Amino acid sequence: MAAFGIALLVAGAVMVAAEAHAPHGALGMIGGLALLIGGITAILSLGGSAAVAVPVGVLLGLGAGGWTLAVGRQVVHSRARAVRSGTQALSGRVGEVRQWDDRGGQVFVDGALWRACHDEIGVSAEQADERFEPGDRVVVEYTRGLTLCVRRAEAWELHR
Picture (tube, rainbow, N blue to C red):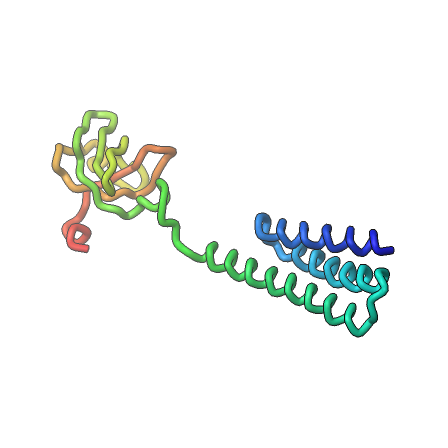
């Protein structure tokens, strides 16, 4: 019976650790339950009294439950935060045209040179044929892979 209790302790610890890598709540709760039962079973089967086994098992279970709640809370907060890196974070940023031809060009945004094309969504035919010159200020509307789709910056956007 002691081997069963120790196996439950190990399995519970593994599940609680796995909860940190795949936070959904289920692994942490099952792991906490396994730690609680495993702690009580291991202590009782090794000759310990119930006065020791139950508080130790409860503490193990509460510790695992607290860990699961803390990890779950961090996951909820991280999903609510705005993207701060990568191409997704470039939407709305102002950049400067460095080179442009008929099909697109290069713009300098946030300290890097990016391949760019004209924003095709929500622009008129005249705006779509508009050429940019080096030094023109543009706004990133969206990204398509590693290509930024840009439009000419309006005056109010240059003073943010």
